[in-house]
Image 1 (cartoon, rainbow, N blue to C red):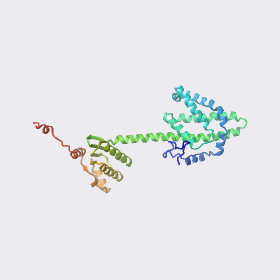
Image 2 (spheres, one colour):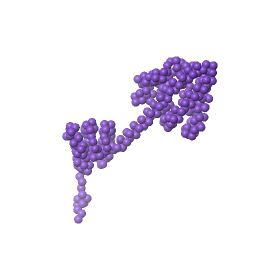
Image 3 (cartoon, helix red, strand yellow):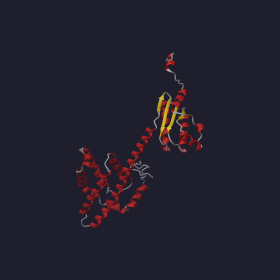
Image 4 (cartoon, rainbow, N blue to C red):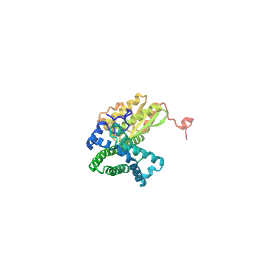
Length: 322
């Protein structure tokens, strides 16, 4: 089940694609051997964390500002002050002792924000290294008389930080994959434009390899265009399609049927001999297709169906050129 926040709504980033569920979080904790005693140890550190939070944050941003690549993100003093406050909240939450749905949702949100501003993972993950070193040093100072407890507490903190790192990496990967999918969808849409030739007549030129996903996009795009343009005839030109398998062929037949249900007549042009033979061998019912040899013939047939007639200029004017 998705992890819910205190508001009762699932965090956006706990999507099915990310598969960050309560069970998944528990599995990660188990793998890191993060147990109740670790949470208790960190909760016992909260009062100390309140004392050294500000110095740690100041040291961290002094470190950020010493590098050109990270200093560029904090050129505005107001932005710097705001992120310092957010960073302090993040830091203190490490020792609250509650590491359930709200905690994980907050970590994913923070990771997404950093990915959105294009903060490279090497700098983002480098900050965790700085945290661990800074906190480790202060633990030894505070617990100088009990170094065993200091080391044990530090190990508990390291387990939690590594869970945070895993969540951060997940958000970067998820966001990048989401961007790539959107770009691929945009490319597919550009590769199958639906063009209006004249009133009520559309042209759908299909070029390249057609897989099931692209075939689905072709159908959806065509049906939208039919509705938007109140089209009555569609010329579907597949001259640029080298091969069609049974799934794609059936999908195209479904597209023709769906267009017919919306009141549009579909003419298929550019059927190569190879594709025609493949369709016959696959046992596809070609009687459901209205085919014309080439694109020009398909457009002429579409115009005829719509009542258009090609007239020579001389014939229209009553005279013919000599």
